[in-house]
Length: 131
Image (cartoon, rainbow, N blue to C red; front, top):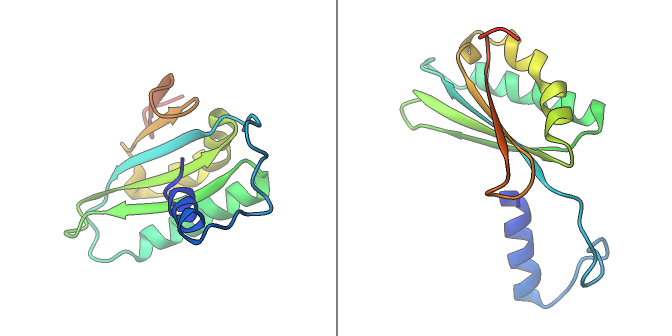
């Protein structure tokens, strides 16, 4: 479950209300696949990262393959993670791969595609290692 959804669920629980878009109790939800990108950064500021994030989010929205959930970046800007979620991990990665490959700091980044909830089968791809 994405961090945003965890926070939203906690707020709903606290206020005792329920979202109109919540599935009925017992309904099956589509599997939530994840794409997590671990990259080395080392640039003096986050402007290049913010540019890539904007392009990643645009690619995901344009392809209707899920959502961009955000990043984690080390305080010293040495490395970081990008988090994306959707119903099809391969489709999600296919949508963002060109953006990742176009960013020089993403060369050597390790992408984990998870095919379901935590603990599900995963694939690992290194950006710039050939297809």
